[in-house]
Structures are given as structure tokens and as C-alpha cells.
Length: 258
Length: 283
Image (cartoon, rainbow over all chains, first blue to last red; front, side, top):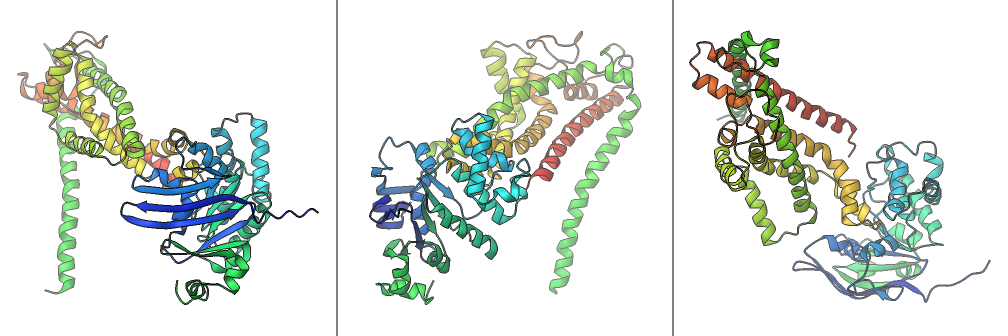
């Protein structure tokens, strides 16, 4: 097997990123490189701006009128905040899985086919292939292949979250953002999602925001620690958890505050 | 005073008020039924109106007129109201202009119906030369109903979880795709329910239609949008106040009963729509 190291290759990078909500300065001058086909986790106490940072990466703040973003975010070297960026295409390339599983009130099939359909795929055979493929990648196919036409709302929370991942995979993203994807799930479902993320790492660049430090330590290659909207420390996960440089990082990961 | 006694006193007051509203409704229904049920028969429902001898004819033209009116109001007010609600709730930013629009809508919902009647007379009857007609009346009542449809539709849109919107946006959907495929299907039953209630209220209006096109007597049924029309509430009004036949009061009550049943049926449809939707809804 050929081993390729991507360690010096960043897929998505923020440069002096600031996010404001009205007068609230939520993200302060953060420059961070997220490596291609690696898992980067973002940890920090509640209100430190983790989710805000994540949502800047696919321009989800666009829908909040009071939000203002300055600085640059480069996806494959191109600034996604440049005028004339196709936000719709950006969000297809940078998918997002939310904290609370949010399947649409449609059948399992229609949930996964939603993305391909809005992007113009009409052919039933093609859609069936994408749905099966995506559900298999999301480790959900075995459980639902015999009831694709039933409502997604009848699935368990963990299954719903994997369905949301399958839905994201169906539009063939390059980057997937996970916003505390397991915080509403039980430990068994959490373990399944973590296994799934590990298997997705080969093909996708993953950024995950998590409250759960063990989760960050278990699955991520790189870890960034945020505090009060600032990036305190960033590095390889093992290093951050074993020999952090900053006192604040050490205090947080040893549970002295948070 | 002992808190427990206070609790009992307030509870009793609240309960009394609840029962009072029920008693008023029942009393009113009993009154209309007692007075009017005697005149209800097939001929009364399906016959043409005979103004010389009110016992011979029926109120079919008034039923048909009110039905046409309701249809016209629905056609004009529901699309406009729902579109406006979608704009306000899904697209509009909270600018000064939008705040003014919201304030206007809220105030329009409280304008007395007779004022709408005068407005309709000035604009639809005279300015646009529709004459006193079914069209002018439908447009007038539609103007009155639109604020209710907007308010009900906005409430329905607010109950759609943000996850439905964000999830679709994150897949690269445009705003309109999100609305069409995810938001509207979830909000539509609530919108329809609210619209039906607004429609039912419009169909019971008397004051505005007197000004813009209702008539007490006409040969046959209206066969054009520019015809005058008979309507149940106006029919009740004339029979109860202007008619010198000794039986007029009974016939007024009978007509009122038909109107109440019609409105009740519409409310029932709205309730069924809502119930079926709630049963299916899983969020």
C-alpha cells in the first residue's frame, strides 16, 4: 500500500477570520489550516466560538442578518468570501452535519436523494445508486435497506444522524463539517458515528466541533483549542493532549475549568 | 388570606368565565334554532327567492351568492396572503421598511369592516368601474381577509423547525428550493387552516357587501362577475329589519341558521385538516 502524507497540504484555511454578531465579537482573528483528508477537531468551553467558527466555513452565517465576517477563508486556495462566490456550490463542496439530527419529514430515500435532486439529477436509476452508495458509506444501509420508503422521522436518534451524514455524502462534498454531532446521542450511537468518521477520513477532509475531549482525542489528527473567541493552541492531537504548550489548554483538558 | 383560599377563588373565576362563553354560544344557537328551524325544508334551501310571498320561495340565490363570494375571496386573498407571509418570514431582513409593513398588516387586521366597504366602493366600484358587483365585493372582502391570512401563514411558517431550512441550505439548496421542497409542505396545512377561518369570517360579513354589491332580490343566479348577488348575511339583515311580512323574523332566523351551519362546516373542515396533519407530524 502506498502511504501518502498530506501533512503539509491544507484543504481549507482561515486567515485572520473575525465574526461579529452586532457588537458581539465572537471570533477573533483566527488563522487556522485544516489538512486535506485529516480530521481536525475544535474543542473549548461553551460559548468559545467553536460552532460560530465552523459555520463560517460554509457561509451559514449568511442567513443571519446581524452576522458580519471579515478576513479570508481559502478552500483549495480560493477565498470563499470573495464577491461572486457561488454559495450554493460552496455548500455542496463543504457539507455540514448538525448538532441535533435534522432529517426532513420525508422518506429515508427522499432524504438522501434530496441533495442530488436539487442539483438536477432526475434519473431514478442514478438516484437509487447514489442513495444506496451513500447509505452504505454512512453504515446505515444494512439497517434500512428494506424500508427506504418509510418516514425518516421513525428512525432512532443515532440512525437519524447517520442518515444526515448519508444525505451530506450524497452530494459528494470535499469537506464535511460536524457540529457536535454526538451531543444528542447515546454512547453506542456515538461509537458508531466515530467509527464512521474514521472510515470517511480516507476520502474527506473533516472538521468536528466537540464538547467531548475524549472524542477529540480518539478520532482527530489535529486539535485546535478555542477560548473566548480566540485560538489558544493548535497542533497534532497527541501533542495537545499530552504536552500542551499553553497553561489554558492544560487547564481545560485536565478538567480544571470548562 | 390563606394561599389555598386565594387559589380557589381565582380558579373559580377562571372556570366561571370559561363556562360563560360556552353558555353564551349555546344560548345563541338555541335561540336561532328555536326561531328558525320551523322554516327549514328542502324548498327553503333549494328554491328561488319570492319576495312577494316569502313563504313560497327559498334562499338558494343567497347560498350560491355567499358561496361564490367565498370562492372569490379565496382566489384573491390566499395566494397574496401566503406569498406575503413567505416574503416576510423567509426573505425579508428586519429593516425599517419591513417593520412598517408588519405594523401596517397588524393594524389592517383591526380596521372595521365598514371601512373596507367604503374603500371597496371608492376603488373597485367607482375608480376601476367594476360597478356594484360580485367582483367588487370579492375584492373588498379579500382586502379585509389578506391580513388574517398573512398572520395565520406566518404563524404556520414559524412552526417549521429551522433544521429543515439549515439542513437543506447546507446541501447547496437555494432559498427558493428550501422553501418549495421543505418549508411549504410542512407549513401548508397550518396556512390552509388559518385561511379557511379567515374565509369563514369574510363570508359572514354584512356591512361591506351592502355598499359594494349585495342585493336583496334578483331574478336567477349571478352568471357573471359583474352581476349583483344575494348573500346570506345581508338577507338576514333585510328580513330582520326591513321586511313587513309577519313571518319575516322566522325566515331571518332560518337564513341565519343556514349561515351558521355553513360557517360551522368550514370550521369543521379546518379542524379536520389540522387534526390529520398533527397526527402525521412527528417533529
